[in-house]
Image (cartoon, helix red, strand yellow):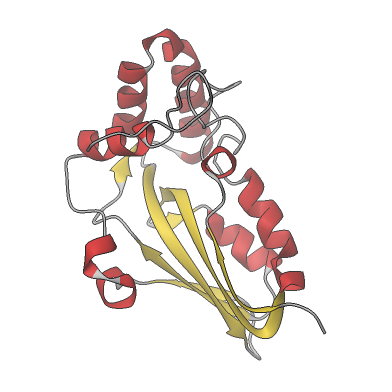
Amino acid sequence: MGGYDVSSVEPPYWLRFLQLGDGIEGTLTSNGGPEGNRFVELLLQRLEACLQPDGQAFICLFQFVRHGEPLVCELLVRYLEHRVVELTPSQARPISFAVYCRSYAEIFPEAKVTIARWEGDLLGKYGDALMLNHYVAHVGPQTDGPTRYVIRENFPEKYGENLLVPLRSDKQLSYGRIVENIVDVSGREMAWLS
């Protein structure tokens, strides 16, 4: 039987982040789909084939949050077999989607129409209480029960206090999350100070 005991996955930025229409030149945000989960879904569809039954995976995700739950929860239950997934936010708090969109429009004023259309589409689909947050999804070994997920605010204890993104204003968090995906014209990621 093949498969791994432990897998750690952080989908490349161009795979895991959000798609704004046809994308915005100069960002790595073009291929994740409007909700950012296109390639996460492909990963989850194939994950069971990569893991031993007692294997585990750690996946870093940037997620829309609706009513306190990341959108990826539906995919976890759909594709994983008899596993418990612990979702741990890696930011001190979520970012307001409205502020995130305003920050994107400030950094990319030429894409305001695209950003506004993307924002309107998602608000129409999910309502106006959307937030954004980074998570570590710890996919546990197979169990006898159905797949389920639990959200735990235990990042400092589980992964370390120094790795938790500190509490800042929504605007500061938005800028940080946006600029970590900006590339120069040659395609290399830019180094940004936050």
